[in-house]
Length: 117
Length: 112
Image (cartoon, rainbow over all chains, first blue to last red; front, side, top):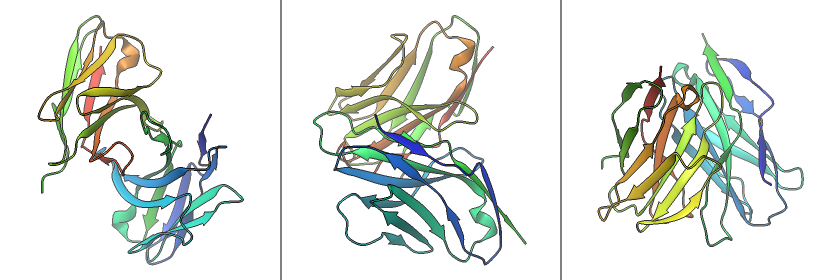
């Protein structure tokens, strides 16, 4: 069974600094996707970045980059130049694409990021 | 373009009652998924629908049911509400089941 582990319940970072949020996963399936979502206190899950298991290069989206280490089964999110508006819960999630049924997202427990002045 | 919309935003019910939550996907998206997020946890998968057919069901009791309409909107129904059903219910849509899912703002359900 697939599992996502986020070991950092909370993180602090100063404004304008970079921060890395950890995510490890467990699967024996060769075809999968890894996602990061941001959830502000309002509750909506905001999609940030996606990495496919066969992608050769690490994904980047603006200030977000994904440090994908397939052999270690890790998919850490790096946020550069943190802003106060980055304060939120961050969830790592995984889905599978080689089945004929649902591609459900399996989420980790999340990391609460607090950006300080 | 409008994102995923959900209604109502908040709901208070008592134990034993029934509730219906509604979701409209992003225009052009044909797949809708439902998730339950209990306070302090990550979302848990409940259902996925594509082209009005159920494509997957999570580990939830039969009190939970859903359907998708010809316009791709969806309803989640929960019967015989329990205190433990209190949660944020999130709806997500994508064009096809195996693409990135985009979430709505959620419905906060409180069962008293």
